[in-house]
Image 1: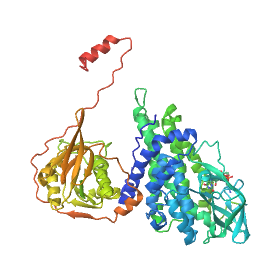
Image 2: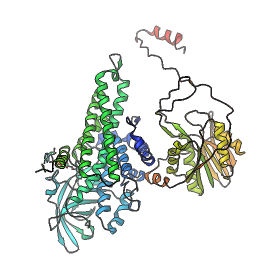
Image 3: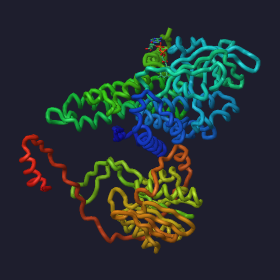
Image 4: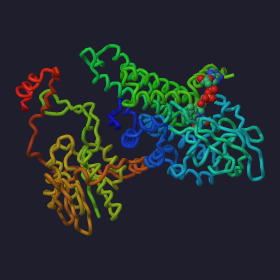
Length: 393
Length: 246
Ligand SMILES: Cc1cc2nc3c(=O)[nH]c(=O)nc-3n(C[C@H](O)[C@H](O)[C@H](O)COP(=O)(O)OP(=O)(O)OC[C@H]3O[C@@H](n4cnc5c(N)ncnc54)[C@H](O)[C@@H]3O)c2cc1C
């Protein structure tokens, strides 16, 4: 039996006053959608390690794909803060559901919008926005994760086509995707983006099994064996690593908001549980050690909310630097993971079950800590930004 | 078809209500507000369904200050075409009904909807008073409605069953659960709502005939008494003497 989702938002510093009417409406709408569509089913799907595919359409209907892209290209015409609060509410439900939307909007629609030809935009974006097409983003390779620049996936010239060879690993949505935005090196050694379509000969996308994290999100490989891709499917407007990295900036920005949602859900559950659970004749919320946990949680959430809001304001002005985004992604995801762990303790033994969302969030956040640039890699980005010295290699 | 939906703003269902010192008013500090669910889920959505099937317009009206614009905007995001806000604090059902009637009497609306009650004061009065002020027939607690031509066939939940009534347009109804199903606004609707007009109008004359003198909160729940399973006599005694249920 699915539990009723009793979640309530928490806004200790009145950050809502910094949001506009449409941000608040967007947040409430997505919250209502998550309570209706995600909460009742998510524990079961997670337990079965199955992707709730019906949500792809639902996410499109609510408008979660590319909300800050222009309406004419299938987006929502909203600002970056609206995009942020939408990701926050989705991840409040589940990081995997948020990932379904982040990949589609920020890693598939965004590169086509930003670097695609007009023809590519018209062909793919409306269908991606409406959920008719599902997309995935292939950057990571078996031997190149934190160092994507070393990738070996490459393509050779073949008249009006190119021949693509290589493999990508850890690709969200890949087994169910209609198209993949794949980053590969061309004959000139430069990285370019290609739109590879399901059904192209030599292209397969097997599923990865055995994940203990992000279990409701489907992850797979992309394997290319002499795949003939029309040249018209190459994104014309970008060459080099900055192509994929600018997409990642978009998605990481959304994660910086999203992680707050997971943290809020854990805090909300822990706060309620601690007031109801009686030990030694009083609610465990009445013990100093529990209060320390709860007080520190809401303090960290409040700091993260302010960080995200300020980052959103900068993003709306076009001024959020990749390094600033790295800082917020790193801080907020780590904050959420710490809160999940503390919240798990407050729930005692119940905390390890699917009666409460905490353990699922905690396991999910292990992925969120690693993908889109690991916790340590983002630290090195900040380090490089403040010292001017590259410590990656 | 021209339809009008009266909408109000109410505290969230989970809000913790506190009173001021002498119990004459509710403390509003820190309360979160929502669009009254009976107005939103049932009245507004049924009006939109009829519009989608038969054409026409759906206007929403609210009596309140600018702080209510966000719930009005939500109604526009769900799909209403335009809105009227009567710029006055809603002090009583009678005053609200009079102000809505004054603002809309020349609107020639075919169907006027209210929720069956607002979930804060649960008065269930505005709709019937509005019908009286507008001089229109009134059907309360509508849980199903079909409209064909100028006739509406409405089901009402009554004790132990349902009653079906027919009423010619124009009329006023109050919406109960079942009339329609909640629609969550999507991002496109929210963005479109920004461009839809909220026409702010001044209130007509209205007076309050009934004045609230005091509010009281329910008493806190008593402690739980644990009784040894072997001591059935004590349980029976408590059920008889304290709980007084036997
Ligand atoms: C569920 C899931 C979904 C994913 N979805 C996608 C997707 O859709 N598309 C996609 O392209 N990728 C995706 N990824 C891949 C993800 O981005 C990579 O896992 C991530 O970038 C890390 O790469 P790696 O796993 O190869 O780890 P590695 O790069 O091998 O890192 C291992 C460890 O070494 C550390 N490390 C590496 N280099 C340094 C250094 N210079 N200094 C200090 N420490 C270092 C890292 O911080 C990490 O702790 C996904 C991953 C997961 C788990």
